[in-house]
Amino acid sequence: MTIRLNVNGKQNTIDCQAGEMLTEVLRRAGYLEVKKGCDTGNCGACTVLVDGKPVLSCSYLAARAEGREITTIQGLAEEARAFARFLTAEGADQCGFCAPGFALTVLSMKKELHNPDEAEIRHYLAGNLCRCSGYEGQIRAIKKYLEAEHA
Amino acid sequence: MEILEYARPRNMDEAFRLIRERRGTAIGGAAWLRTNTKIMTLGVDLAGLGLEYIREAGGCIEIGAMTTYRELETSPLLKSRFGSLFDATVSHVVGIQLRNIITVGGTVAGRYGFSDLNTTLCALGAKVVFYPGQTLALADFIEKGAGGPFLLEKILLPASMKAAYQQMRISENDFPIINTTSAWTGSGWRIAVGSRPAATRLCRRAMAFLGDEPRPSDEKIASASQIAADELQFGSDIRASAEYRREILPALVRRALVEVRG
Ligand SMILES: Cc1cc2nc3c(=O)[nH]c(=O)nc-3n(C[C@H](O)[C@H](O)[C@H](O)COP(=O)(O)OP(=O)(O)OC[C@H]3O[C@@H](n4cnc5c(N)ncnc54)[C@H](O)[C@@H]3O)c2cc1C
Ligand code: FES
Ligand code: FES
Image 1 (cartoon, each protein chain N blue to C red):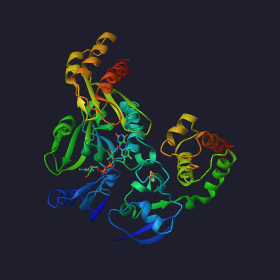
Image 2: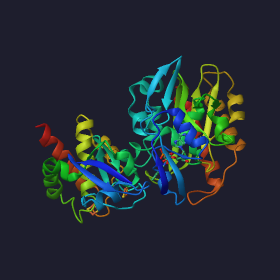
Image 3: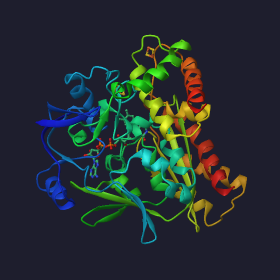
Image 4: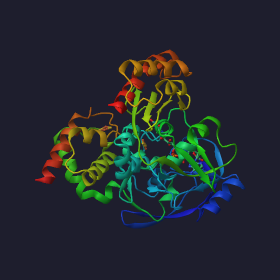
């Protein structure tokens, strides 16, 4: 089947199988910033926004995304870059594979929660696994980023 | 997951016909279906049928089949009627990105043994409404199924109830080893236990033992918690043995009952 996907404000006409998930389809269309980690719904690496909400693209039916707004990390490049500076400064970005999904979730959290405390931050990010960092640097980075944004 | 033909019905009649007459597979969030290697001849996408809602009607709370877990945990209506119950029940399920996808309908229809949500819904005495109109008690549906293809439309809950959820997991994002919800209905207690690892069951003997006493003593609660563990069957799997589950359960039931009693 052929579907039309609005990705980062751009219309794409893409051939896909009826049962295909969004990760595959987006990557085939060149959106390689959408990472494929576990491919079982457990790691968060494949996170994209659909109509502004963070979802796992590996578990989201591509055909269902037709008519909705999809945002990858490239669609929020400026905000993501601002956050990435804090990640780097805290030594929290190592191999970087988890970073696109992680940053998108942080940016969603910033919109959804007002001034979250550490427990709320950890809870919101529970679905983003990182193989390298041990999470402490990421938590420091998020706190400093949110402080700077609210300053 | 492979789907040979994909349909997006425009209304419930059409969806029902595709499921009933053409043996189509209902697609909820699809997060669980996609882990399946089965080939689906006809996938019936339920998005766009207006089944995403949490509302009050006819003295009940109605939850549409396509409502996501994230909608449950952030619903002001559910919070005002059940406190933090729904948040406590679903917030351990992986992360918010999955909870923005997975649905109440897919969970109830699947009757999964490991389910957190079905345990809470059972304890609340939820009813399942199938399109075009049959209604079943969730506890009965979980035990016996629907006896053929069905289209789940919504869940009905009492307008409010005091209830508490308890679970144990090896790690945060894993399935529960065991879970339980206790509820005070205003005239009696309901206790449901799931992830045994088989599906949720009501602890009818423990419920009868507690009777209609709204403030049972600590001793009575301890005895009821042990009765709950004694009356159920447990199994062993990769996460825990049947013996371990039986040992752990009374502590969780006791905590839930104490939380509700206050
Ligand atoms: C990675 C992962 C981790 C999980 N961890 C947990 C956990 O820790 N605890 C927990 O409780 N749950 C867990 N779950 C299960 C989850 O909570 C849902 O119960 C499950 O994903 C089913 O919901 P769905 O919307 O994805 O359903 P789908 O995959 O769309 O459907 C599941 C089944 O229900 C049928 N169906 C769906 N909607 C309807 C309807 N309206 N009418 C009739 N039939 C219907 C489908 O045909 C299918 O057979 C997990 C799921 C995943 C993918
Ligand atoms: S790739 Fe989607 S959750 Fe891991
Ligand atoms: S930095 Fe390597 S997975 Fe997170």
